[in-house]
Amino acid sequence: MTSTHDSPTVVWFRDDLRIRDNAAVRWAAERGPVIGLFIDENPGRPLGGAARWWRERSLGLLYHDLASHGVPLLRRSGDPVAVVAEVATQVGAGAVTWNRRYHQPWCEIDAEIKTQLRDQGLEAHSHPGFLLTEPWEVTSGAGTPYKVYTPFSKAAFPLAEGRAEQVGDPFPAGLTGPETTDPLDKPEVIDPFWATELASHCSPGEQAALDRLEKFLDGLREHGGYAQGRDEMAKVVTSGLSPYLRFGEISIHRVWSEVAAAADCGDIEAEDAQVFLKELLWRDFAWHRLYALPQMDTDNVRAQFNRFGWAWDEEEITKLIDGRHPLSPTSTDEFHVVMAAWRAGRTGIPLVDAGMRELWATGSMHNRSRMVVASFLTKNLQIHWRHGEEWFWETLVDADPASNAFNWQWAAGSGDDASPYFRIFNPETQARKFDPEETYIRRWIPEYGTPDYPEPIVDLKESRRDALEAYDAIK
Image (cartoon, rainbow, N blue to C red; front, side):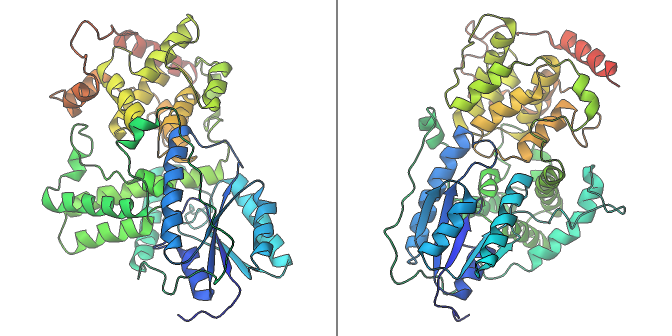
């Protein structure tokens, strides 16, 4: 489409660090010259160290991708209500556009900015695209948000399928920047102290996301087995797309479209595709619940769990915010010793320790391991889920405000669809079933089976009995 405006359009990038399949970039390119903007803001808690590391590298790559089309990426910090209007005035913009976000503090900010810009005579447009479905589109017959995944997925699936069928040319035609701009503001990289290890396992950026999707599809074409194999921790079966979706380096509609198309033409097994697509909808479900419950990262969804006797230490939560959190205990009392052992992967429970060490080394963890380590912390150790959620927030490259809190509350039993809420994963049973050759365990615990490996910090049978009694008490 031919550009129709001489004044530039500012594209405000947030969790959509890509050019392709980006509705805001496409709309801006159709309108005229484009200027990118990224704002370091803090409407909620700061990003954890691993996610911040990923985002910084993704921003740097986006900066170069945009520059190759003559589009500058400006970086500012501060209150976006002031910054967006200020940048729009400085560059002589006629419009500002962005892709929507769905946490209430952010929604309120975006609504205020949209009103402010329009009052100043500028165009302001927001676009869907971060989720498969909008929270207000998928509601029960009573018009309320779904609290259980199965009916949610049945209602959301046809909407997601219809959106995916509309995915077209991924690259915005005519993308260009203004003829003259201020010097480009190259993002500065801020690293957590364990970043060297992360760098050997992670490849942020839009191109890496596209490559990852193609690798996943190639694996499904050649070997299949995703529906059954996704729980086997020693196999490389899962997509690895979660951090790319978290920062919008790839469109979730593009992922859905390509997986569904491969199944439709018989390139991959229909069962594999269906299972994977429903997992994409689980991500939507988490965000829909956060949209309805903006305090989900701190407040129990089920009020009766306010009476549950989880161990809690406010000081431990505070330490995680400063960016440097030792793996060794800060005191000799049992709570701090146990928390340090869990974080360091030295509980003496092999599958738990393997998962926690994988997390520290790679910024990720197999989904089956995530469920096991979360169940172990909240049920066998009876430590508050918020301690686990905060540690994952700090160390996962794919930690986002919805999925992280939603999944921790699901594991703890205090959240939506956590049925049965008293389910306790036995790490030994899980290991026998999903890591029968101990390949995953030995990969991450080199001292496993030697005198250097610690004794268990808790008896699994006794702690299971204690947890069931505690859950029974709050029925």
